[in-house]
Structures are given as C-alpha cells and as structure tokens.
Length: 194
Image (tube, rainbow, N blue to C red; front, side):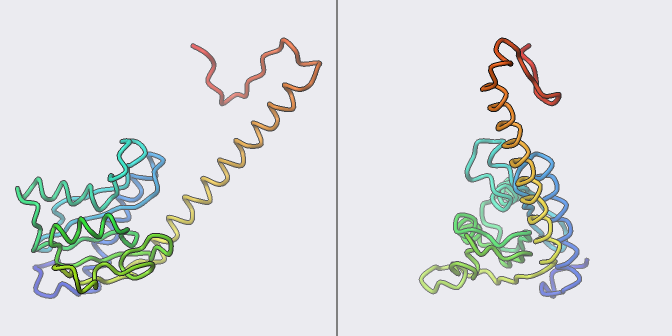
C-alpha cells in the first residue's frame, strides 16, 4: 500500500474499505448495526472500530468514534492530522464533529446515509465554511458491499421481529384458550426459569 504520497489512490481506498467492512461484521456478530471504521496513517492501519452502542450502553460508541479513540490513545494525541478515516457508512453529525476535532485529513465512506448522513446526504458539516477544519471527503467506495451488508442486517432483524411477534401472538391465543388454564407452554428456544 506504500506511503501516503497519493491519498486518492482508488485501489488503496478499496483495500482499506474492505478492512472496515470486516470490522462491520464484528458489529453484526454482536447484534449491532454493522458499521466498521479504520484509521490509516502512513499507509498502515493504525486503529479500527465497529459499532457497539447497544452492548456498551454508550450512545457515542459508533465505529468512527471507537476507531478515533483507539488511534488517539496509540499516538498519545487527540489530533490525528496525518491520518485518514475509512468508514462503511457516511458519518453522522456526532462523528463528523469528532472527525473535525481530531483533524482527520481525509474521510472515505462506503454507503450514503439518507437519514443521518453529515457528509452531504442530509447536511454537509465537512464543507461548512464557519468550521475551522475541513477534511477531504470521498464517498461511494465499495458502496454496494457496504449497503448490502446494512440491507441484509435489517432484513434479518425484520424477520426476527416478525417471528417474535408471531410467537407472542400464538402465546396470547393459547393464554386465552380456556382449555389451557393451568398449563405452562414454552417454545423450544425459550429459556426456562433457572
């Protein structure tokens, strides 16, 4: 991957985005929205992060924030002026603010976020002239793979919720059936009292 002489190298961008996609799979494995991030310095991975706000009960535990925290700790400075950030989903306003405070040189994202994207989809905080730092932003790198991962995650979640609703409705019908009074009914996947 070489040095950072040409930070806009498409092959380099795809390489680091694939690492961010791997991080997104870590989030999915924990039941979190699959977003991954990678901080790159001098052509090498400095730090990684993935979404984990639910499991950590931390609304700031987005992939970008976690990667920035790890990178800043490693270099001993919150300013990451010579670093690039790769993230599978367009950053939200919170993450855009953290990226600007860290003075990230370049932000590369995969899929746009039409609901909370702060790099152009909803607002563009990176081009706001009243702010004192402006990272270069490139979107759409491995966008199809990043978007597909999110679509599959939410499709799985909808199927799981539909199955749970169906079980709940079945249990409610059974509970109302007078023939079932005094009988405890559990599904095989329900954990019994221990």
